[in-house]
Length: 487
Ligand SMILES: Cc1cc2nc3c(=O)[nH]c(=O)nc-3n(C[C@H](O)[C@H](O)[C@H](O)COP(=O)(O)OP(=O)(O)OC[C@H]3O[C@@H](n4cnc5c(N)ncnc54)[C@H](O)[C@@H]3O)c2cc1C
Ligand SMILES: *[C@@H]1O[C@H](CO)[C@@H](O)[C@H](O)[C@H]1NC(C)=O
Ligand SMILES: *[C@@H]1O[C@H](CO)[C@@H](O)[C@H](O)[C@H]1NC(C)=O
Ligand SMILES: *[C@@H]1O[C@H](CO)[C@@H](O)[C@H](O)[C@H]1NC(C)=O
Ligand SMILES: *[C@@H]1O[C@H](CO)[C@@H](O)[C@H](O)[C@H]1NC(C)=O
Ligand SMILES: *[C@@H]1O[C@H](CO)[C@@H](O)[C@H](O)[C@H]1NC(C)=O
Image (cartoon, rainbow, N blue to C red):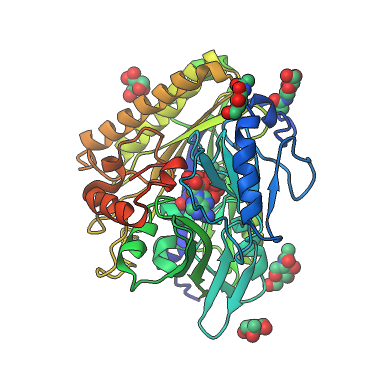
């Protein structure tokens, strides 16, 4: 019997990693997060004003927050504690309507979520707006869409869809929020077939900076363009309506292959008690292992493997969450490339070993990981030409996302690690350029771009239009008080 394998249904993610042998895992709640507050009283008036403006469906919380569900981890997930002065929880029936210019910095995040690694993007010493009460998943069979509350994780979405025979184009690993991933673009297991998450949106429900609730569809050209990759610049999204796709059983899972099989393994790495490894995440959108595609990897002497056939939700559950707890800190950096040539992969392996060893000299809790994401060349072709998006600024050629992750524990090293990450990103990009790839100015992926990345490096020639839309939608720059890449 001949089995036909459709490469578009496959996705392989490789991470070359050097993992600290022993990261101290403290329990996940950031119970110290209110200790860093400078001045609680200065926020009382603002919090009190919010209280007068919201309905009984919302709540304003003041520190110290009860450490019980549904109020659990309130800190910035990837950079330790934040100061939460008060929090508003809303349902789609109500909203705080800012009648005065909002006087304090604020942040929007899913309570306990916040997967961006950039400081201040979803954390603040001001008012935290938690989206947790926007938590429903509703399938509409008639329109083949799924309405998803902006306070959910992809875990919640896939769980709700398990058994329905339907799925959406969404996040790849457990723990990540629907809102941030979708507002930044969204690379999915199903991107080879259907494009980015933003290419699979039916509509957004949002609150504009002036307090009005708006449903945004493709006819609304400017907001539609801006919301697709433009992050939190145009308001707060409360609901994402995504197109539904039929979903059968899938094959996939994870394999971790010992770094002793890297060609360039060297003594320095061993000396610093680090464990180099190759982490493989494999996905096939069909019930059986596709012949040929993953065979070379599966033939390597693996140290750990968990691959299976079953529902999409089961596959998703096999992937370990990158659960940063206790004192672990982390930054990401985006380095888009055109192809993963042998020369480029060599450079990536060398960078992994080099920085794994170097950072381990400074901090025993170091983890470095270089994620090689091999998408199909057609990944940007799933949005009609009439529907450009904030990201990617140029859909005429494919860019393969690659991201570098550095984790550490000592706060005194924050600036040094950020610089190391910048340096390593340049080295990898230059290796791609030396390899003949025209990526000197390739657009970085907003969701993985390191803080401080110039807007033009992410949004390219879209920057003037995005700024113009922002000025019109938010003339008082209310959203400018929330962190992020700002137009
Ligand atoms: C372990 C891990 C796995 C990842 N996997 C993927 C992946 O498979 N594919 C991919 O594309 N990316 C992935 N990423 C990157 C991810 O998309 C970004 O980190 C993203 O910002 C996370 O979204 P969040 O809602 O969890 O983040 P948050 O930190 O809560 O928010 C990120 C930004 O979005 C804004 N925001 C949040 N909610 C709203 C809202 N309702 N309205 C307006 N603005 C809002 C915040 O203000 C903030 O600026 C991953 C990251 C990590 C750490
Ligand atoms: C909380 O603070 C105490 C005292 O400052 C400290 O000993 C402890 O390690 C902190 N816990 C966390 C999770 O940061
Ligand atoms: C805190 O803020 C209030 C109001 O702005 C101010 O009066 C007070 O002096 C501040 N306290 C400290 C310790 O800074
Ligand atoms: C939608 O269709 C699925 C199967 O086709 C069915 O199980 C489900 O009950 C339907 N939902 C609604 C709201 O009609
Ligand atoms: C997911 O759905 C499958 C049926 O498609 C079912 O067998 C399985 O128990 C469900 N898993 C969970 C965790 O609900
Ligand atoms: C490995 O990377 C380091 C740091 O970027 C660099 O100095 C060194 O020349 C590289 N070695 C090779 C063989 O590429």
